[in-house]
Length: 426
Image (cartoon, rainbow, N blue to C red; front, side, top):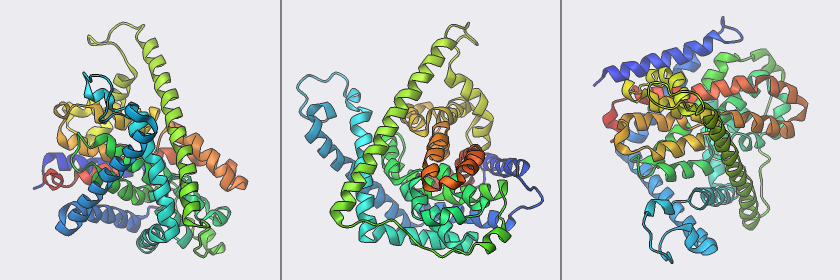
């Protein structure tokens, strides 16, 4: 049954695409076939994963696997940190069990385990097959060349800078449009390591949290490709002048080497996330402290979250959020952009179940599930400066546009989900 809320999301989908077209480098070129194909892929994926019983069972099994992975991780954390990691065996009476959930002990260690597991699965060939299958789908349905298609698929599972590593030898020969697309897709998705962390944060407030997070990252890839191609249209002449053949450089010497290097990579990611959260949350507290010096507005203190809520309320309404939730949801979207998506997911997880509509929570899980934030701009410049130093100035010139695309790509994914009946996700 098509409701007003679904029409709301349809309007948001049209506005997001129109906005990207309005700031396109060549408005006379619009990828109509790509737009139809990308949106169709998104709809079919969501309908298949949540509407078909066999696939829904697979998604449910993945969710249980995520929970089992988180539980196994806690076993390792408890062995190292003892009662500090929470759980049983507390030496003191616990008055507030919720206080036992410490981010540094419950979320960051999951990243270490997932990175090690991903490296091992890649070495064994399992993740290779999955990545190449997605790459083939993107190549055939969205007109991507082999190496960029492989990098887009790898980005879904490995991350915004780690994905392009798989085609490092080709980066210098990619067209400007393809390079922009890779950066944009990197900001549209999240890494496999953080997917599990987000699912752990939301599991108590969002049914099938793991399924939603996995689906969100996957469907945001074609959304990122589409919006990137609209902003910087495909240069067929440049692609024909630089023929490419699919290849991959990522390899490990043994299973032990894969696990060891995966742990090392995971540690770097976890430390970077922890340090970034400390700094950005501290900066937000400083801003709120300064805003607190101003008189109250509408009977309440002025805060960064309130300001962001007002700014982004129209956008979240367009993707399908009810008007009465727009202020809260808009603040979450703003926090994602300014303070990283991790901070936004933590706030979404801390939002009481009764405080917002269940549909709002589902839509925001998709809208927040991407790396498009100010911190990622620096990470991409640093990463690509190492991967392809000869194109550093080119990356710097397009990275803010890529953040714009990545930010809107997750909103586009949320709009696609908003087109579907809410009963599908119960």
